[in-house]
Length: 182
Image (cartoon, rainbow, N blue to C red; front, side, top):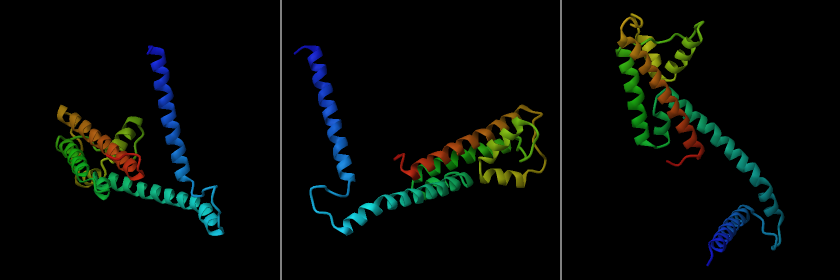
C-alpha cells in the first residue's frame, strides 16, 4: 500500500470516528427523539432544561468564586473545601513558609495607600498572602529593615508568597468550575 493511500485512509478513519463521536454527543444531549410521539410534559421538560442548566452554571460560578475568596483569605482553604487535602497542605506550607521567612528577614510590608506604582504593586503582592498580610500589619512594630540585604530578600520572599497564593486562588477557582480535574 502506498504512503499517500495509507495517509488518506488514516485521515478518513480519524474524521469518521470524530464525526460519529460528535453526532452521538449531540444526540445524547437532545432530550427529545424526533421519531417518537412528544407529550406536553416532555416538551415542558425540554424547554425548562436549558433554563435549569443556566441556573446550575450560575450557581457553580458563584460557588467557585466563594472557593477562590476562601483560598485567598487563608492559603489552601479553597482546596481544603474542595477536598484536595494534599494541595491544601502544600499551598499553605509554601505560602506560609515564604511569608514567615520574609517577615523574619525584615521584609517591607507595603501599606495600602502609596503614591508610587511599585509600592502599589508591592501592596498587591503582599495582600495576596491573605491572613499572613493581616498578621504582619498587626504585629509589625519596627518597620522594614531594608538597610541590610536580608530585608531586601525578605521583601522578595513576601512578594513570592503572594504570587504563589494567587496561583492557588486561580487553581481552586478552575477546579471548582470543573475545568481542571487534578
